[in-house]
Amino acid sequence: MSDPNLMSWIDDWEQVRQDVNKVTEEAVKRVQASTAQARQIQTQIKQDKIINNNIANFLEFLLKNIKTDELISAVYNTFFKVINPKNWAVYFRKKVNNIVIVWFFAPFYKSEIEKFQLEKYYSDILPEGDITYNNYLLYIKKLSNKHHDNIPINKENLLTLLYYIMVEFHLLNWLPNKKEEMTKEINKALH
Image 1: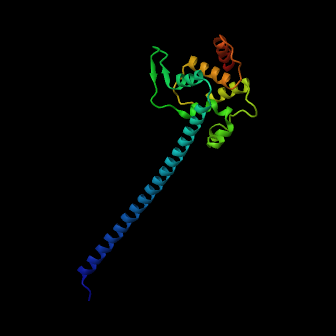
Image 2: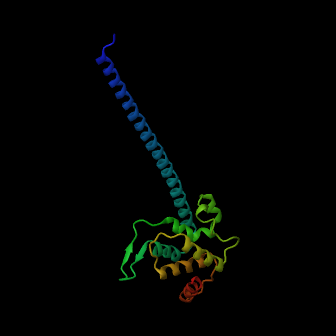
Image 3: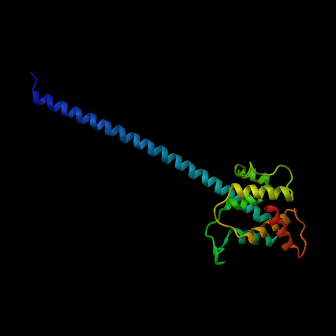
């Protein structure tokens, strides 16, 4: 005959073993979900690193190819300085949205944009064919509507930047003492 206490004891252990299996299954599922999430984050970090390297390589290329100090100064003043419109205090950004800088030059360097695998940011708004004064300004309007980093850009600095970009890439003729007049024209065309 079997001992009733022994049977009760075996039943109790069977219940404990089933509970342990449930806990183990739940723990395994949690670990698997965490592992999948960690892999996804790791993949995203690798992709971000590749994109950041490509942006840095394009910016390095760009700085080697810009011919005028005024354009480099305009890039600095537009993207590295923030002017508070309430009190006109100037702040310097510690971190710049590099992709925004690239956007302004992308139409002039389409093959380099492809080379550095950055076309996905621009392909839907890049002008087709040769870049002209009008289609560049249209591109800038589209760019403004589509991509921004919510950091206000000083309007005067932006217009100066656009002026020097257009002079650099021969969309405007550089005429001494005409910068102010041309920036007003650019401003008017953007509205």
